[in-house]
Image (cartoon, rainbow, N blue to C red; front, side, top):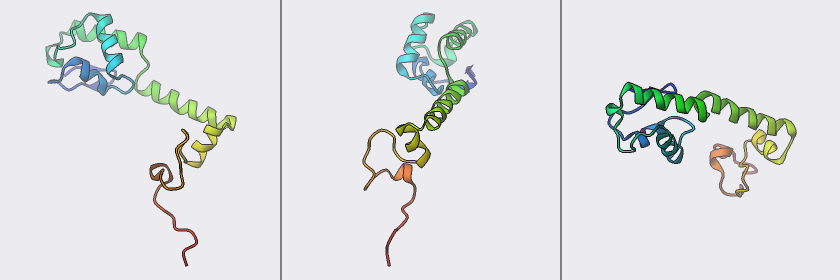
Length: 120
């Protein structure tokens, strides 16, 4: 089982798609990593040699922020927005959408279950 960045990659999948199981790596980043390491996109995870897995591991460690570090950075960035008192920070604090979506009828994911107001 190939374990990269603390994530067990699925054995039967092609490496370009298997790398996307790591938080912070999408398809484009996955392909860039494979280009830098010189590994074919069509290689299956179970076909990787230990040396190839090590080169992928090293490349990710040096060039890409993933998993815990990335989650921590995102959390700190949101906290900084809230501390600044910016519009986006206020929206985060209130649990409302931050990117301009309407909230009169939608935004149930952010707002939660409906609270009926004014119904007699």
